[in-house]
Length: 140
Image (cartoon, rainbow, N blue to C red; front, top):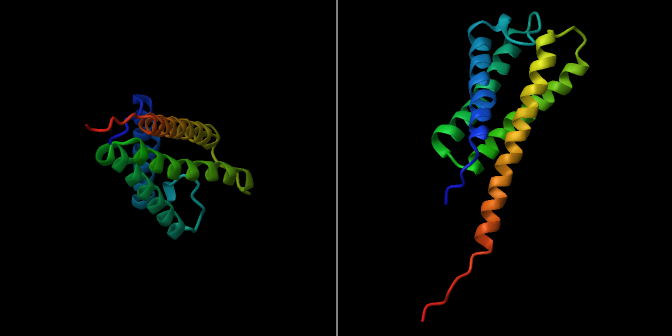
């Protein structure tokens, strides 16, 4: 049984768990020194960071285009939300000054992903609750 999600969950998943990570991942691979949070002399880290972004983007695209179910969305959103929340925490421990845009973008992205995750989990819970209360009629 397919469990649908609200349209806003699909929009958030496409934007914050698929499209943006795809763009950031490709930028990190094509031009590592232009990657967000690039550390001078750490090209290999930038490439790994780009691979991480592309891998999580793949989860987002798979949820939206292939799985199309609240359970798939929840997995992709949980993975992407974890990345974003940890990146927000990382901002507070950086010794160099990150761009002001990251202080705006990361909290917006984190919050959006967490809201979409909560909505996906609610859809799963509601579908599970509905099916557990189903009445079966024995055949005669």
